[in-house]
Length: 384
Image (cartoon, rainbow, N blue to C red; front, side, top):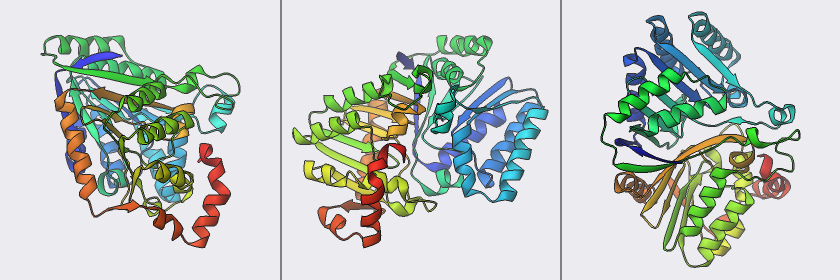
């Protein structure tokens, strides 16, 4: 949907985003909503949970919406003791009166196939919202690249209202307060907000046999198809649903300069399956002329830049799950205040020593084990 903002602050620097998040929580006086794919019980998770508890105890209405599958998946990164401590911290929040929701989609098959939400929004009564690619984990603030945006204006109540589509209970009074604040501010940044929760549009079989339509995927395809000169993309692992992959290949084949920045297999120590799902498509991408880069530290931002004049940023990874299992959100704009930061990020990524260009020779030099795993498991890309 079309909306506007009175302010747009890019948050590429990891500690700048963290400081802004924590300041919002500490300054909240009436309400605070936060949605996450998962939260880790590390230094960042503990600091955030302590701040949320303090806020609830001073009278703030705190609502935390965590994805049930995402939290279970992230839990493998924690020790049993940390998982127990996290459960206790969440329980303490509930006892204090906070609303803590583990979102799970309505249908049994959806839950079995890892359906859920992947949206990361934080908003308070002060009239600012943060839409981010990252979670509350050390990986997001000290490891991987992430990108977030702090916005004010009419877009803020729109972001809040979408929390109701991923398990939240949004108060009309809170929406009205944010709308009243926006009405006092000069709105001159035009934005498009793209959101879809595919779990709300599926039948009894969930993602099985379902290919859409997903309104957000459709907007992404339209954006890619509109590229005439250049197309820059970041994603955790680049393994898009086939219609979106076809659009990227079409762009490269018609002469558009396409660059994709995603993660090296070492960026996710727990498993290489996500990399395998991406690597299975390397020959198609390289044959089409796509410039493909792997980041050893991890590229977890989700940015699309078309012709250096149209940018979209948010939570949508180029993967099948973003199309048929996970709720996602993106903000898009042609305003230079949105486009210029994205342009600068791609300039930085291109020159970064962390990024290694993938070539046909790179693929030929894969170890035998990696080659066998790509051959064996790559066919199951949709589920990895």
